[in-house]
Amino acid sequence: MTRPELCRPVPVADDASAAYWAGAREHRLVIMRCGDCAFYVHPPRAVCPRCQQETLVGEEVSGRGTIYSYHVMHLPGVPGFTPPYAVAVVELAEQPGLFAVGNVLDCPPEEMATGMAVRVTFEELAGSDMTLPQWSREQA
Amino acid sequence: MTDYTMRDKSAIVGVGHTGCTKDAGAAPEAVWMRAVREALDDAGLRPADIDGISTPFTDTWPMGAVPTPFTLTESLGLPGLRWHAGPLGGAYSLGSVASAALAVSTGQCDTALAVHCMMRPKKKGPTAYNYRGAQAASGVYAHLAPYGYSVFVQMMATVTRRLLDTNGLTREQLGRLVVDQRSNALRNPLAVMKDPLTLEQYLDARWLAEPLALYDADMPVDAAIAVVITRSDRARDCRSRPVTIRHVSTFLGPRPDWVFQADYAELFPADLGRDFWRRAEIDPADLSFAEIQDGFSVYVPLWLEALGIVKRGEAGGYIGDGNLALGGSLPTNTHGGNLSEGRLQGGGAVVEAVRQLRGQAGERQVDGATTGLVTVGGSPTVCAALLHV
Ligand SMILES: [Zn+2]
Image 1: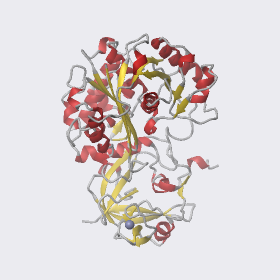
Image 2: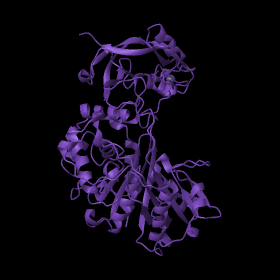
Image 3: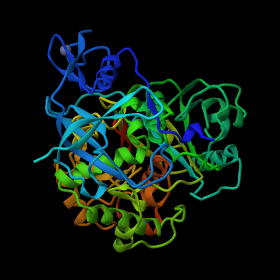
């Protein structure tokens, strides 16, 4: 029997993030961008925090980024994950301080490094219709 | 000089602290009322003298291990209260003291009680401590939990990694901080940790979330503190030496999640730091000591830089040189901090600051202490207070 509290969390799309998750299903990294001031915003939200307009629309981005920081989780108890595993904060190429979180799927935890170049990839989340933006090492 | 209304208008006249243990062996109400009785006795006051109460949580329904103005009013047998509130800036223990100081300073009440209690979870659940993601991850957690990122220690580990790689911090410097605080705790009978710790033990400890290991995280305990705050013009009539509250500042960071904020080296509020000293009209160089709530070791360098005690990128070297040890230039977390006294979310820091300023800190007394800093929390919700005698 599967204990639901031990399953990997499935993201829930909402009005603000619908375009982001729809893009992921098509294997496109879609980030919300302000139609007025061109500011990128992630995680998705309803109103631009720079100009306060309701003009955020999803826009496909390059999918390139660098690892801003990361950690290697060693504690058990996070549903669906077996430690040790690494989680990265990726700074997207489009804008300083524009961060996305993910796992670098082809990088063992001990090879993770701040500043490492990564490129978006996609992972179908088993048992759901959701696709996760994920990361792989940029080939030199 | 600007006339800030609260300046020196309130004072701490009573403190109580149960001491930190792994199991208090008593109901939560019994634990926090031990601290309350001690604080009232310290001040030479009776329950009927209390006309205001502040606590970190203010829900009206019973919350188990959490004292609220409602449960405390009942416990004290009071017919009602003139004033009650939650913590200023959302900052748990110190925030409750700060709320009370504002209320007393502005005539909302005359004598207020601030209480905080922590009890360890007695049952092990299926998920990690402080697990924040539901199995259906929504809002910001939709962008964290599916990647296995949903426990608070992971956020602090990611911040620490950035500081280690780009802001001049080393694990050895964090270790120096932790080891120094442990030796302070050995001089504090209220502390849960009773054994010495070496730098080698610190560096060899098992990882929680790398680069944070076992001794970088605070120690869960059963404990409570209580603080009595009254008008400065009444404080001299109380039993113990009053400690004057010069100023409290709070700050709300730009994001609630510790993940998507653009610059991790400024995750703690540098804006608060710039403002705090001006309003307190005290220079950081005049501090006798600092009690900086250390939910994780990395809070301390973040606070030192945010408050401008050192420049950005210099906290690690400052710590590594031993400045924070007893006898150093700024003795810090003289009671052992949350790391070695116990997880009171800064409650122990408040009590320690009062005892240092009264000269009651025993073997860990900072000679001639007149001015102390207490900080609690981290971005997004923080509070800093300047106390003096
Ligand atoms: Zn805009």
